[in-house]
Image 1 (cartoon, protein in one colour):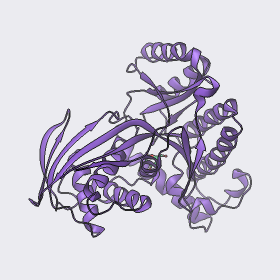
Image 2 (cartoon, protein in one colour; image 1 turned 90 degrees about the vertical axis):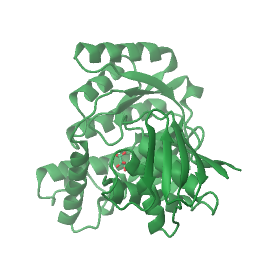
Image 3 (cartoon, helix red, strand yellow; image 1 turned 180 degrees about the horizontal axis):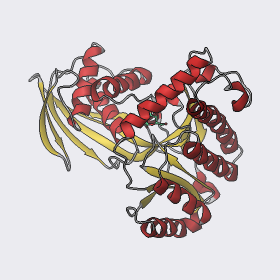
Length: 364
Ligand code: GLA
């Protein structure tokens, strides 16, 4: 029996580093997907062929620490399914993907979510929250990245022409209309090709800052902070840096809700302004941008974008911009010229719309 399962990458329109703070985010699933062809066998090994990455044999019973590189994502999913009481027996896997790797577009969530779909198709796929948690456990405890649930929930719940308002406190996911093309506006994703060697450690440090800030306030998490001006409600946070980190999280939650309201009103100018404010908060309070990323966002804006911000975990990756469709080429050309002038890598850009979520496409 061959199973075909697939799952998309994502861009987050707003709500960065809010997921592990029980806050709000507003991602879309991309139309770019990872697709798995899986033939089950009871050999105890997975023979994996990934286009562009060659062939590997991966034991299905590997423990955390025993497999690294991209194979850890495959072995981690098999391990996590075992923890869930859904052991994988082995088999042959073929992986194809058009989700850019290492660009902050959640190629790892696309891979993990599609693998879970393939491995569980014959016995019944889990509900989407369990599916997301199986993928997150693989990433947290096997791969070793202390990430939240944003990427997996976006990949699993994606809908065509809809953004997803995720509340990480209740874990509800509500679709919000997102089709800027009807208003003559295009979502442009600009890959900076900038990567930061310390991104993993910086992510964990941001997470600890947020936890310390909540603890200083005597609260379980930053979502529990009472409404009010961030500088007032965060006054009891002892460390100035922790206070700024927490201020980003609180203001970012507000921006997600503002953007949702603006989308429902068809007010893309306000969505753009909120994206700009989000970028400033990530740059100044959360300090997860880089000079090259700031330059791309600022150039996109000065070349006419309605708004631009870095998307994803930070320290590189992609900038997204909302741009009048007639100005897309001008904005992209300006960004490439500015990055080149500054001596950075040449950015590349593509236009994006919201696509469908993970699915099991064929069981035969
Ligand atoms: C990465 C993580 C997510 C989320 C974002 C930042 O993509 O995997 O869980 O924290 O960074 O919003």
